[in-house]
Image (tube, rainbow, N blue to C red; front, side, top):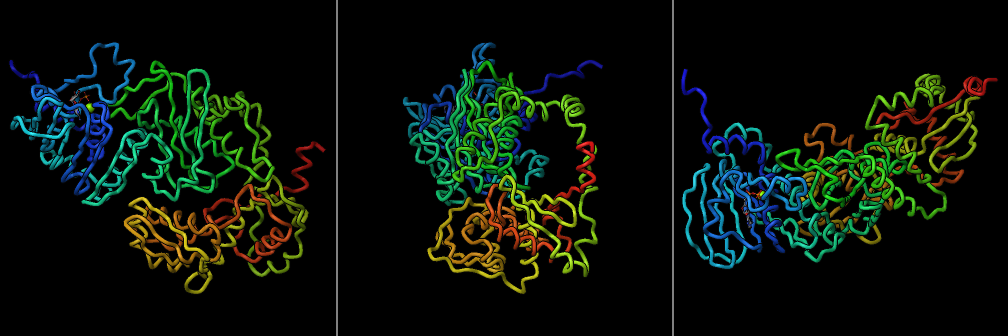
Length: 576
Ligand code: ADP
Ligand code: MG
């Protein structure tokens, strides 16, 4: 049985490890760009073809690699960045494992040209083997070209999505890195076309504009907050500027692009009361903390970060967001009061440890058990069938509460109606029954919008649907549209509604249900929001409409429109 245990040879180790470090073209781009950043570059160009599967090029103007070190750069666990074990715990540079180049070299054909100021050289590596190293003229800096990614690992190749999807991932990763480094001039070229180019002047807003589209910058609010050694800054969208999903969200810890559920939760919770349903905020959140507070060494791709004190980070981010949003309200009626740190702790505990939350709820909110929302939903027969006309005269409007709920009396019941959900329902029903196309309204001044590539594509492919919705748009360039006409119901919200519809189309992919879904989006975005003051006439109009639409106690997303309380229930609470 001798000779069964073998030390794996380097080729095989690299091929196995490659799967951990690089799983798709975007992770190759990430590793290469991080190397460029570590080399002190001020200008970084990224170019891809075929979704990055066929071709990736990253060119920088950093300090380069010497000819005699080129082979070493492709050797496993060779790094110029980590010298002692202690360094692992306070990592400042991006790369530190010395894994990227050997991993990439193992699963593709890589050519690196570099000039460190003492003459240029180039190295070619294919399937983990060095094919050649030679002196070759090159401009100062480094260019790495990666071709035929995963050509020798068919299993990996099969796992990739379409070239468009892979290109979108590259767009995402390059955007993140560009936002993390506004002082560096970034450009991304896809299939020979410039996708974005940042000015590299150190201004985050300017950079965000270049990456996301300039028409959005004026809807980004600046965030600043400090507490002890913690510093938070960044940009968040005003509440009318939202996304579905988390595409508009970027998190950075000590300038490192990260994914972190604590930060995501803090941002989302910061918007509590401002957003409805599926809406997700836009935010670029930078957290700077002493490097001993975090552990980044949890994943080979280094995107996950762990905070030693999650509670502190959560509270500060959430507070920063809420303070910013509350300062926005120009109507003089606060949307909410800023929570004390004590309350912040509760909110934090509520999601971080479910058992604790349940324990809390038991003693504090026990009366909620008796309050069964399903039971208090209006009985079906009240709002459907022939009775509806008769019911119309039976409501009595009492007023609006918290600028968000219509309070009225219906048949001896106290009705608390979600104004947004109700208006959304009314608009949706009108849109659905409108024969043919939706009514469009010519704009006095055409609006121009810049779109990220995937939304631009969605627009180009769905011109028919857009015109059915009442839009008339014109293509102005690679990434911008002019809106000349918008749906009448979306008056003054034309851009927002268009973006939401395109987001929705893009997310759905398959054709089925696209039209209904688009109508839902138009209704949602056109409806009054929570926090808007309504006049008595507006509320009366909505209530009258309410009695005319069938199945009206749910909004198009399926949320209930209202809760109602009976005298009996109220008396029970008051122990009468
Ligand atoms: P790591 O970044 O973890 O050190 P890599 O495999 O990504 O490992 O890179 C290996 C080494 O190659 C780096 O430590 C660095 O010395 C050198 N290197 C790679 N890319 C560049 C670049 N663009 N400019 C200068 N040096 C580079
Ligand atoms: Mg690296």
